[in-house]
Image (cartoon, rainbow, N blue to C red; front, side):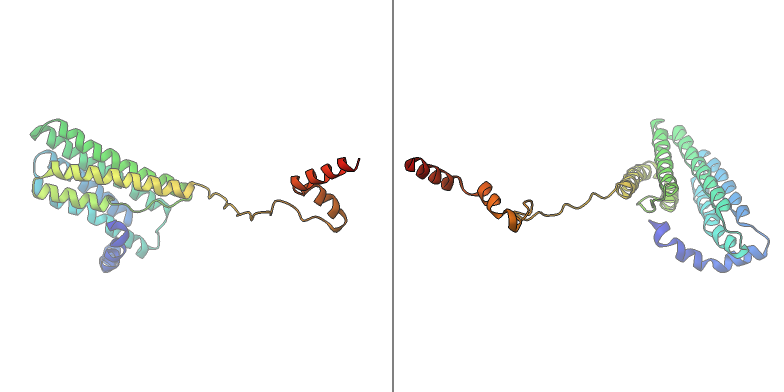
Length: 238
């Protein structure tokens, strides 16, 4: 949701920063690697119980993901290879963060809450796969209530106020809803439209009789009572 509504605006606002990074010799792929390194370091901090430091780590993890597109445009090398590399690194970064959360919860809370963190991770991978598979088939599957930006924001809130378990429940519900939204969206696009039924007016199924066969048509379609009357009169004449 935030990716669709605010990402383009934020990237335009950070365009001068992207220009400065490009002039400094930093590439878009380099920023992607930096974000991945921040994610792994943040995961280690969270697993060790340094939640406030983890908040800053989450911010630093998401910042390169906003800047790498600007740097790629400045360099003129924006293309499918960089987009693929960025997507793969984002998935690895998400996995690292939630594994760190699961590790922390297994040490400090009920061990079953670690499964909660892994369930959020699994559903987040599912919605990413839905979009990738849909786009490979020529359909559109963007949007939803819980995309990557929302996950990072809520994770930062949970770390800052030490309310990871309630936040994870919210993330689980919204991520599941997003998976359903994308499934229905792609299903509707992939379902062929049924041909509309044309309304037949009464009597349209019968052809109009030709002039030469009018007598035969009337003999076949005249009322039964008239036939009975004529047959009776004929018998009396006999």
